[in-house]
Amino acid sequence: MNLNGKVALVTGASSGIGAATARKLAANGIKVGLAARRVDRLQALAEEIRTGGGEALAIEMDVTDSASVNAGVAALTQAFGTVDILVNNAGLMPISDYDSFKTDEWHRMVDVNIKGVLNATAAVLPVLIAKNGGHIVNLSSIAGRKVFKGLGVYCATKFAVAAISDGLRMEVGPKYGIRVTCLQPGAVESELFEHISDSGYRAQMEDLKGQLTFLKAEDIADTALFALQAPAHLDVAELFVLPTSQGW
Image (spheres, helix red, strand yellow):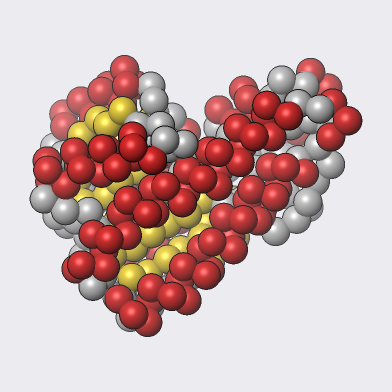
C-alpha cells in the first residue's frame, strides 16, 4: 500500500519504539502526529523530522485522560485534515512481586497500557469509520503471550491489548475495511526498564542485556511499516518479533 500523504498518530512518541516508528513513518511520506507528555522531546523530534523533509506535529497528550486524547486528535485533524493510522504505543513496565504491594504501579499500568489504548482508539476510530478505511497498530508484547514472574500485572495488560486488537479486527475489518495489527515484541532496548522501582528485578533486567542481543526500537518500527505497507486486502493481524538469541 502506498503510504505517501497518509496521516498517523503515534502515542508514546517521545522515546523508544514510538520515536523510532514516527521517524520511520515520516521517512516514508506519512505526516506524523507525535503524542506524549514530554513536549520538549516531541518538539525536538518534530523539528528533526521537518529538517529531514517530513511533516510532523508535536501533541501534548496524556493517554489516560480521554479529554486530552480527544483534544490531541482534534489538533491533528485540524493540522493535516484527517487521521489514517493510529499506533498505540504508550506503555509502562514496572516489575515487582505481588507481595511487594506496589498497587500504585498496578493501577498506573492498567490506566496507561489498557485504558490508554481504548481512549486513543475511541478518539480515532470514528474518523476511520467515516472514511471506510485505515489502520490501527497496537503494541502488545511477548508478555501478552506468556506470563513471567514479577510481571503478572504487566502481562495482564498486554494480554488485554492482544484481546482488544483481535476483537476490534473482527468487528471493524468486515464492516469498514479498517485493518488492525497487534505487534508482540520480545526483548527490545527501550526506556521501559527505567520504570522498574524494584532493585532486584532492575538488576536482573540489566543482567539480561549481557545474555541477549536485544532488538532495537528501529526493528519494531520496521515491523510496523511492514504491516502498514501490506496490500489493502491483507491484514497482518499479529506479528511476534523477538531476538534470534531469545530462547524463551
